[in-house]
Image (tube, rainbow, N blue to C red):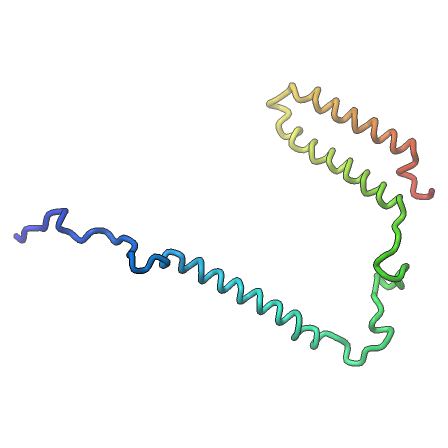
Length: 144
């Protein structure tokens, strides 16, 4: 029978070599190079190749006008005024969207925490007052 070498005589486990301190970062460097290469390829393709393939062969005024659902554009240019009603509707949407975002988690945990009923009731009462105010001011009237 051959005698085995004692544990201390075995080859020590592999440790990072001091001669190659950047070897653990090689996969990260490779990923970074691939990301930069893909980004550069996307920029080149979208800036030089695709526009040449997709633009009209014989540009005419009708081909260069914007197409909006089959209707001509209502206003010229990007700098036009919006009605205040647009902003009012957007704010009301945010107000009642936040209400729905708070109601769902409350409804999920309601059975285990019954004391939250009164907090949610006061929250809904505050929203109801805001809804009545907006309705009274005519913010929900589209024909004004």
